Image (cartoon, helix red, strand yellow):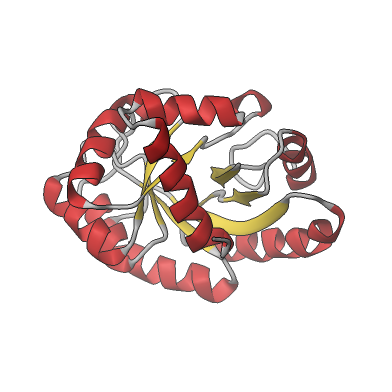
Length: 215
């Protein structure tokens, strides 16, 4: 079990990284990514701090903390440069906050994230077939979200990804302790989006091989 989209006090989450890591370790996670919200104003503040705390905590935890970032509500033309900057700063997983049906995300954000080669497009909402094909071509993982509101388009995302061969990932988008998902809850998110149990297992295996470098 792993989750590659969680938030800490470095943006709008409730937990410091150490507590977040401990809580998911108790749930049996093998890895968790802290991907706090960022734009050009705070990118260089968050990523180095998450990298440093990961280096301090990982030797003492059964669960690996992965430093990441979520580029959020940024005008689409600025996304490619911020993706590059995030990676240069040491973000191992770059998430872009997609066109969720419950937030006023700028149109064109999904496409900009895909063209920039972000690792994960979070809660991409009513993403188009053309954009899902682009995700398949680029190897960008489309998120099935466990978060209220963002999850409303999960079925649409799963159906197009299945038809067009785009990779999927299930994440909590956790901001508080109660948002963190058990394995059973995560599988329920996938099954609720219309995937079979085997398809959920397969998407975890594909994501594990890509992001955790474990086959």
